[in-house]
Amino acid sequence: MDVIDELIANNRAFAASLPVRHVDVRPARGLAIVTCMDSRLDVFAALGLDDGDAHVLRNAGGVITDDVIRSLAISQRRLGTREVMLIHHTDCGLEQITDDGFRAELQEATGVAPAFAIESFTDVEANVRQSILRVRRSGFLLHRGPVRGFVYDVDSHRLREVEAPES
Ligand SMILES: [Zn+2]
Image (cartoon, rainbow, N blue to C red; front, side, top):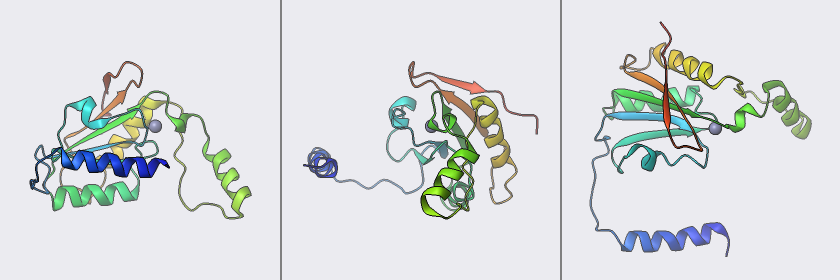
């Protein structure tokens, strides 16, 4: 059985164990979280969230891309979120590549240079501060003040807040 078949069976048991109910599409805690796709970070468990509490946007590195801004704009303007929490983490895969190296690898393998930025980094805290600034400076968002950034330690499970930049 491949992994997805196993997950389908898991879902049958999961759904059977729960009552049918409807939760509001608007996150109850008025919160959007942007974080990495890292498989070791269980966002809901790590933060004590329930389903229906928050939007969780994930990509490689938790990078504030145009697509993340798109989702945050919808989250804030249509679905009522006001606070943004950014969570980067220790031992990220993006620390193990370079923009130039990975771009060259993709181009060599396919003949096409990617149009997207790779967004590798070496200093996780500096990267969090950059992400805070990108959120703050997006005019598409309604709530740019309440944005805080953190580094999650994948070994100790602890969050450490990164001091926000001045502007
Ligand atoms: Zn990561």
